[in-house]
Length: 327
Ligand SMILES: Nc1ncnc2c1ncn2[C@@H]1O[C@H](COP(=O)(O)OP(=O)(O)O)[C@@H](O)[C@H]1O
Ligand SMILES: [Mg+2]
Image (cartoon, rainbow, N blue to C red; front, side, top):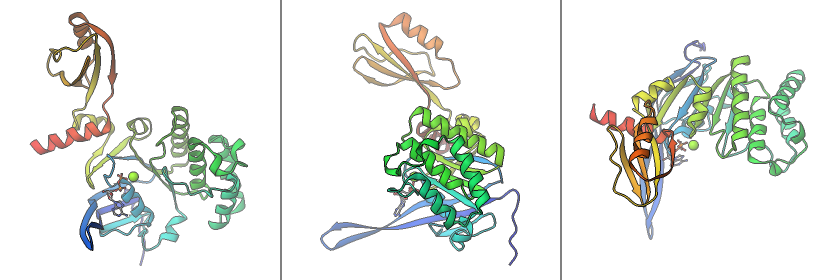
């Protein structure tokens, strides 16, 4: 069998499905069998060197997709290839070509100093000495790990541990890096460091990156292409700007008045979506300036304080659903 590597489809999914059988105890000796369709007929292609965001709410099927792409899980249906390899059939061969980082779980040895995990990986992956040293040096420098190498992993902060995990995933020069929620729980500075590193990695080495995240800012700063998944289905695949249009996203103006009042009479399409005592929430189109709305409220109401919230991804997705239901 010859393995062809289509330049357009370094990662290829063709109607991939994953169904989990779940048994739930519903009473004494009673069990109900239920099927969860975690990934429901998803097709996409990622070209070599692309940096793609894979986003969606909790339980959408993101991690399940990543696990199938590494070979940890076998698809229930459809066809999946990474670098021409069927991941679940040739998991070990694929492991030499991919790197994976799970934000919620470390691949490092908990009780050992960070450097010992790297030494173990050096041997496990049979990385040539020179290559190992060059990659380690580079990661240590760019991820600022020098002072952490002798620290046991359990003593690292979440941000430090994440940087340690990213380095671990890159020691064997993978062509693809999957990151599953790499910025979850990180502080602003750690997030910025991780993002900067990923941007450089992609630019300098052409590493293909598939990134799942809750954080729309990760995508805004890193990915020219975004895929949205919800309930196991691919809802959108395209540029981030197009996603906002597709979801007709809205921002929220949060207004604190000096007392409880009836909903503010706002000029359409702005409207009050929630009232809680003296606080009111107004939704307005994300593309529109908040200034006229703020000016009007300030002139006509006893305004104490206000803030503007950017659209969150879950709201964008929710609106995409509404749109599709209508059309
Ligand atoms: N091993 C499993 N057994 C049963 N159900 C699972 C398993 N893994 C995930 N699921 C279910 O599949 C769906 C998708 O989960 P997941 O891929 O983890 O979502 P996400 O990463 O987008 O939050 C969820 O409903 C989840 O409960
Ligand atoms: Mg997940």
